[in-house]
Picture 1 (cartoon, rainbow, N blue to C red):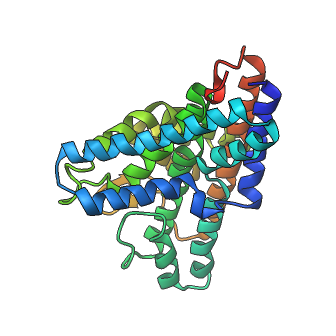
Picture 2: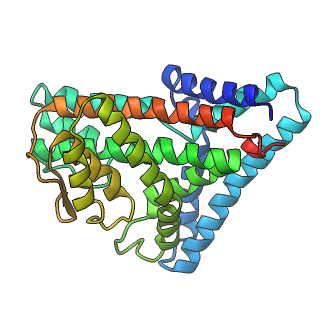
Length: 315
């Protein structure tokens, strides 16, 4: 694929995210993955690694099939048909502006001392029980989610897009959706979700570390203290059950000089139990800058390296 076309697809997908967002939902690949996972679970659930593995296999197969159809469109259809479809497919694998919208829905009621409203909207983006969380733990959950979203919704999809094209980012999105739906160590999913959870850990391993470097660089632009950020990261990045999520969350804790806590699971950082929404607003600014830098890096790589190496899955 021509570099100019590929760059235009990436930039258009970025603009699409900020102007249109996730719509139209009825053909959104992530929604498709979610519906298939729900259907399979209702019909064939059995708390076994085998059945969970079959679900993972078929979900990944759907992702590969979408990539294959897109490849056929690229080969046989005019560019004016392929281009908007490719933009929509790429956009569907990452989500940027929705994190800003979700955060606004949480901190707006908090600034009016409406903790019940904040708990409600936080529950939409985290897996923990939010019904009894105090002000600090609501803000902590929001801040943690901003950091993790940078990895799961931006760095990882872009990373696999650069290596395996549309096939790569679609497969990542399918596996990440699986992990968010069944990748829990509870009675129902301890075996059924094991393969998808481990697969997600493997896929996020490198991107989570790349995301730390990008975030650290962007924090210097905002003049956050490098020493505190690095020391907190070094001390806490391996203290979560997940081999990946502790990296970006501990870095955020160090950057903003706060303590992040998920009760019964982890405590990250030596800073304050913060109750000021301003810290979350600052984190959101860092998130957006880190996102722009990530996209800029992708475009620079496209320009500098001898691409295409079947980038996008296309010759």
